[in-house]
Amino acid sequence: GGSGGGSSDSVATQYERYSMDLYGLSIGAWLGDTIVRDMGNGGLSSSANSKGFGSPQSRPKKKKKSNGPDFGSGFAEWSLGVQKVSMVFKWDFEESVRQVLHFGRSIGSSTGPMPTSSMGTVNDELMSRRLPKEERMTYIDYDMSRYAGFIVGEKYIKCPRYLSFAQAESFPFCTEVSVFLREKKSENDLIIELGDEDELPDAFCTRMSRLYDKDGNFSQGSTSFFMLKPIGGGDGNE
Image (cartoon, rainbow, N blue to C red; front, side):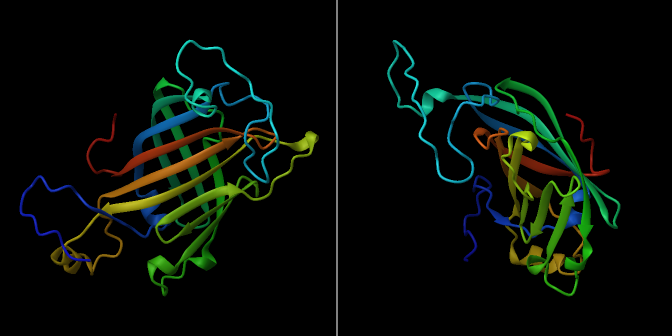
């Protein structure tokens, strides 16, 4: 791609995807905001909404009586919110890693019940530094095999390892996909950076998560935007 030729400071910042690894994830705290989209019943109803997996089941439509305009069946069900969130990966540089989420103040809907602390075991066979960063994959076995995590190039994915809808052992569950970004580099910046593979640039993350109830019904979705605050890099208090 060609470089933007504008010399003005008002040129919008451009971002590019950035390959991530466990070292980069755990070098500081990811601080940001999440936009929550909740089904109007608070995300905990067992009524049949759209299914997260498999084909949608036919569902009775409730007609809301309202004097306002009808915007269609989908929009009236959502309630929105914005909430402060931080995400930290605590890695012992060997086999153990913990993902910790902390949700702060919210305006409107807040994040529903989801695991805020997940303990995992790293499969380090897949972390060979002989491979380019974008070709490495790290697998994390979370919460005694309830969840599986993957770091592949610029993406982090976490999802249930298996699903069971048997009445006796069903649980609510969540999925998440994160993509890591950095400011687009000029050629001069890239030359300076070549020698320091472990030197992290300003890193950003967009994260999409979805919550499902114990019947597999979708109850809440959220989109989060983070910036990495490295440990010891300024005061990260917000």
